[in-house]
Amino acid sequence: MTPADCAEASIRHSEGFSRPWTDGEIEALLVQEPVFGFVARRPGKWQASGGFVLARLVEGEAEILTLAVRPKNRRSGIGWRLMGAVLRHLRSEGAECLFLEVDEGNEAALSLYRRIGFTKVAERAAYYDEGGGARTAALVMRLDLG
Image 1: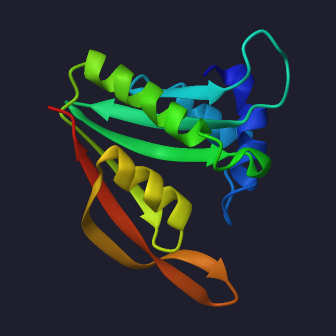
Image 2 (image 1 turned 135 degrees about the vertical axis):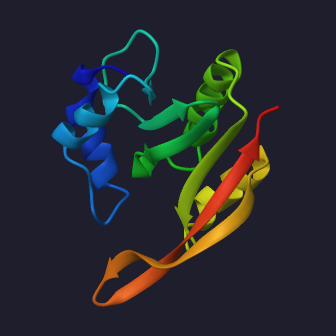
Image 3 (image 1 turned 60 degrees about the horizontal axis):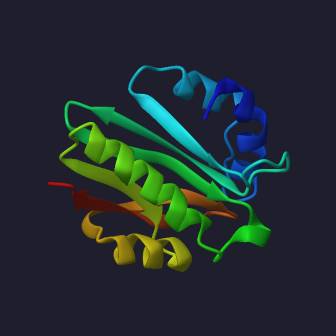
């Protein structure tokens, strides 16, 4: 992922999150040395991306900052492939573990993360603002890479 991908990544993010990140916010993260990302795009074709992921690795511990998949491409394996790219990169860098936070109601994401091997290690009550005064918990999940 490069800064040129940030405007489109912002669109993908807005399609999946109630508080979307701007392209400037995404770029501000991406240019930090420990942050890296991947974009899902068909090889050899210029088209809207199917999704993207941003992650950070510091001192052997990594975290998924965000993962967003275009609504029409959900449940097509894009999230799986993006996570696979992250895991390959982290293992090549010698990372020991990977953390992420996910909305307790996001069943598709929870299913993906559990299939990969993540386990719940904590819960942040009333973390996500769902609008209209509703709040949902964030589940903190961990995957050991060793």
